[in-house]
Image (cartoon, rainbow, N blue to C red; front, side, top):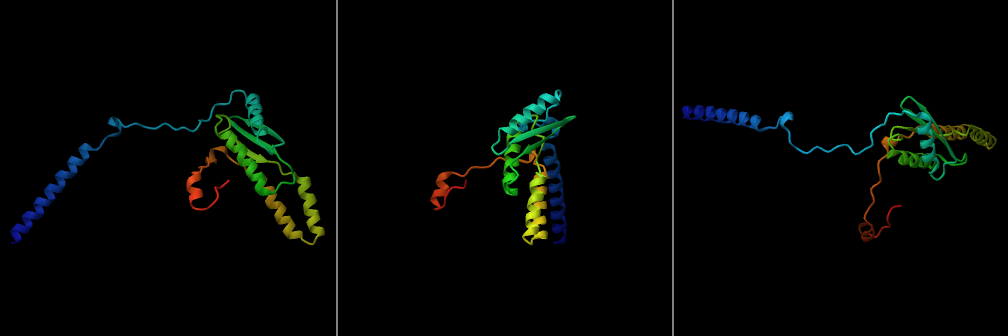
Length: 182
């Protein structure tokens, strides 16, 4: 009985070993890989040869976004920083939405894809609001809210980080009895 068991184990080991060699021979090597490869569809960063022209182009794109009063661009080597000017009385979420819209406009542009978008701080308006909060007896809360607004405007939005929105099918949303998201 033990002779049969030893013979069966040896036979299994030989069969397993042969199977491994056959699998390695059939696996494709990177040199002989004939599969189709997809190219990246995102715009590649272009070398900036004329910084004044690129700055004017990005400023024009930014000014085309609703809510942007003015835009200023500085190009240093191959990086563009775009500051947008928005109304001083906008809350943090609205400023974030405008910055995001500018980043979306830049996303498909080869010069704008790696630009940095930031919003103005409008410090005089912010200081006036802190002063009003102090008079209302809210010095710490008022200062914290204004600092959050200032920081929310300074933090840049990168067009490369913007993800295109996926639209829901209207029939699916309406069949559930809900309204489509806006």
